[in-house]
Amino acid sequence: MTVPPKPSTESAGEKEPLVFIVEDDPSMRRALGNLFQSVGLEVEVFGSASEMLKSKLPDVASCLVLDVRLPGLSGLDFQSELAKANIHIPIIFMTGHGDIPMTVRAMKGGAVDFLTKPFRDQDMLDAVVTAIERDRKRREADKLVAHLQALLETLTPREREVFALVSSGLMNKQVAAELGLAEITVKLHRGHIMRKMDAKSLADLVRKAETLGIRRTRP
Image 1: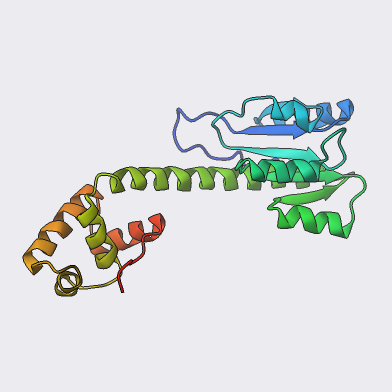
Image 2: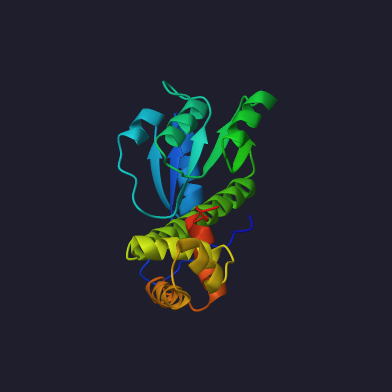
């Protein structure tokens, strides 16, 4: 078996990625746990979706290996419940009774993969590595947005207006005309915005506006 590369860590202090397994067959749980641990992954196992719902999910890059057929809440219904709860953990489905509608529903719901038992260990490991990297990137993006949102909160209401107009491509003179300000005042606001938003250039400021979803609000 070819061992996939272990997902990289951003820093030496970052927690190891975690694989959750929800499978009602004890022998399958053990086999999957041993497989993931053999490549250095941390594992938590559950016999049902309700068991996992009762646990607290750690703040670490992770993925969920989920059986479709489970006692109580099915795997597909559990996927829907996680989405409703705004829990964005990447899911790899596995089943011994797959069909096309089931696969389509899972993938439309954002599943990383849908593996039919018996599957190759390598296929499962590849899917897990892909899922963990996807979750890591999502977490990085969420942290960036949270950081930018905190910077945005330091702007005054007027600075936010100028920010939206400048990032939409208007020149200082045009911004001044729209807001009824002197051009020198717009320049001062723009300087404050660049400093508060920690922008290195206008292009950097525009990228940050796009990340925050800031749009021009005036006609």
